[in-house]
Length: 388
Ligand code: NAD
Image (cartoon, rainbow, N blue to C red; front, side):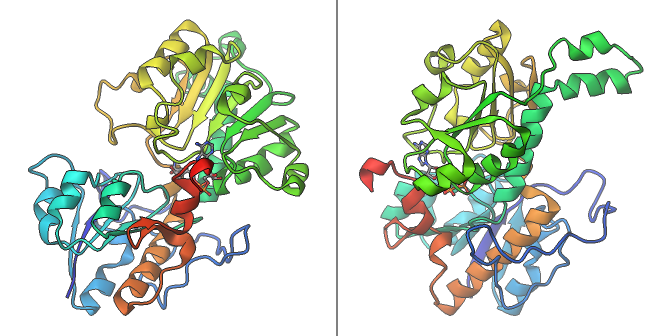
């Protein structure tokens, strides 16, 4: 019998289950790279159900019960008195989503003497101290590709929301106004603009493909350059580093993983080299920026807008500068947890658990840390190319 602690976001304030807006989600069978969507032996939920909150339990309550395992589901995750911290010392597995991350720090991993698997239901395992996981022999896995397209769609939406000044215009409409001049004094067309991506991995490439029909000029930088034929197909210009990219574009979209090389990358110095009135959309990780520097650049007009869904910490405090900075189109961390995405990553979580309990190999593309070192997708994402 194993003990699993699952840390999920709280239920909706109006109760669970919600009244769903639609009855189904489209079935997606494969990913653009040819890999299949998750293949668990069965699922115990209806795709389209809200699974990522405590009552949803990723549709896995029956699976744990049937296996005779102990399952603790909580949203109480921060601080020494939290339920997560209390339940951790004898846990064999921790499951958490990046939207409501259970921060598995070095101290917490050291306390969790039974911990064998830290499973991210979603993508991005930087909430786990990966070095500590290596040292303590904890396997870290995530459901690669499960919500990449979900994030790409959100990114395109937020680019358009900023450039076209959507949110202030919407506000004028719902508040009874018809103030055309106020709406359009900051509104532009995306067409013709230079758009640059930091990283062209699964999400980045999906964003490039979705932006191309807007007749923009596409740029990117990545520690692993795309093959020449892919660059040609995407009609995208490569830049050797972030510095050269940001000064050549009007819009920057961040899609790199968070680790030493990208932490606080968008600081005051880098922001000052951007074109005046640039936009940044960050759906990667909040800590890839310096929040106060972003807010200052919006106040000064160096940035025309900032959007994204990732913050630090999560949830952020009520006085986080991004809640009140001008010209922002921020959302909470939601892009990768649409009901459509949840169906995939809940199924992927079950696929990984089935492998784990049966002692079978977990798909290589799901692995971040295994056998005391970076593995699978982790080895390609969480180290600079120099270390490869
Ligand atoms: P991926 O592994 O497919 O791609 C990551 C890319 O980043 C790779 O091409 C890699 O070479 C590149 N890279 C690594 N270090 C770099 C650096 N220093 N500079 C430039 N490029 C670098 O990952 P993905 O699925 O595209 O996801 C990317 C990130 O997006 C995740 O790590 C996660 O933090 C974030 N994410 C956010 C959400 C959300 O809900 N907002 C959901 C999923 C993923």
